[in-house]
Amino acid sequence: MKILVAGGAGYIGTHTCVSLLQSGYEVVVVDSLVNSRIECVERVQEITGKSVEFIESDIRDRKSLNAIFSKNDIDAVINFAGYKAVGDSVKNPLDYYDNNLNCAIALLEAMSRFNVKVMVFSSSAAVYGEPAELPISEEARTEPESPYGRSKLFIEEMLRDVWHADNSWKVAILRYFNPVGAHPSGLIGEQPNGTPDNLMPVIAKVAQSELQKLNIFGGDYETLDGTAVRDYIHVMDLAGGHSKAIQKLGKSKKGRVLTINLGTGKGYSVLEILKTFEEVSGRKIPFDIVNRRAGDVACSYADPALAKAEINWNAEYGVYDMCKDAWNWQLQHANSSRIENN
Image: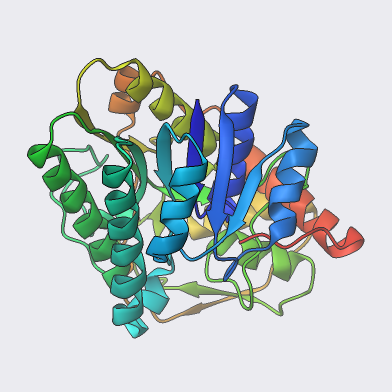
């Protein structure tokens, strides 16, 4: 079975490629390399000992997509293509709508043209917004707080409309909570271009003295210590969820749309993550508490029961492992010029 991975040179994409290859799938990666590098794919091949076909292209390029589908006998698509920073989406909403929605439309058009009707979509817990109750189930209301979250929700609705128009489509919408960590080898991990936006790479860079201190956005939330609480999930657990979803869709005799949370079911505050990282690294991490960031919510963690029931998936890594693998990646990246991977 051959899987087209759109945005497969990125942080979650590369780890998912590792999982797919180790599960016996063939992988074709399409990525514009705007926020990633070709060496990331090479590291995937080094980890797995298997080859990956790579095409550098913007997913919105219809001509290039047609050529890719014509050349390859694609069985399913995983769509990671899109911008992902909540704060940046508040500042630049049109960029997010243009890129994220049009990437999805171009992919769906090509899939329809070549009769490829199996897709796993990289969605987000950001579609829920401020939750009415915790833990968050897939039936919770969807009221995103940011353009990023709204772009994900719009694509979800697009996928449901495609299925309603043609019930032979098999779709898995995976709502991620907060991916962190790195591959245990240290060969691939999260390292954004420029100043990082996500918590874990910032903490790692402060611990390594690449950044002076951590800014914690908000210390007055209604949580145990006043800092925001999130459901952090190891990126390799998340990657495994994609392989499980592909397997489930492949075995399904009828078309359907699965909407599934991928999270651990446990919430940790920013300060709890910081303290765990200090324990793992043996480094003191200075921080300042600053104003809340637009688009953020106080507390978010998953009800992961449906993932277990539908795709036989559950998270295996704990928060200590998440911090340990992120620190291992940071040390290898800093000390041996390991490849940056967003």
